[in-house]
Length: 324
Image: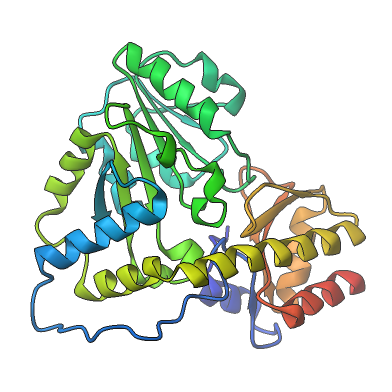
């Protein structure tokens, strides 16, 4: 089964597909941030503590989390996989369907449906907002109430906001107080389209953020990641333009899918999910035409489609769906 972005595997399985591939299998912005005045990076020296602190402060301001603890990570994936060492309260639960990593992050964690989230009263609950792959969202005030109810019995809410940069109104971070028992992960690579930089952040509950920081040591991210991240988060004009452009391109994708009798689901402008008995057949058909989407082994009727980069990519998808 294909994971998002596995073009090498797709090329091996579909050797006759036309080139170049159109990769719509990820939720990564296909039009990445491009540095204009990136400062020179001295790769001979270890990253300085002051440059790391500046990155974290700049990111915190961008998140609306200026009063909260924030620690840089070498990607959100790493932070999630360190959770079991952070002393979180048990029992562990995570919302499903969701990221595969969430199922691995906390040992012996039990999967629960989103409708049961309000029933959780103790332990640690891990969820994504917006969720992947279905784009389900929780309003920040609902999550705030859930987190505070959990805290009353010593519990903890952990939120993966990997896709929240595109829809900042959904983030809980601007609403948190320092004493709230909520830990939030933010991803750099998805919205900025630079997944290879490997940069993310843990925000919120100060003791857990400190525990993750201690596990990662004095140099958690590279000098290159620090320079790129700091410059990108400071580029507020690009951020504003990109949010508007993503919304417009996703609306065009929604219209295209509906023309082909595929109803789009989700609230993230970086991807859409369609549910159809023909999902596997559509995946194969598109792959044979050099268009990679994302199927799911646990939900064979689902297909996730990333937002196309431009009109040409949208037309290529339109034509392929028209020919089937």
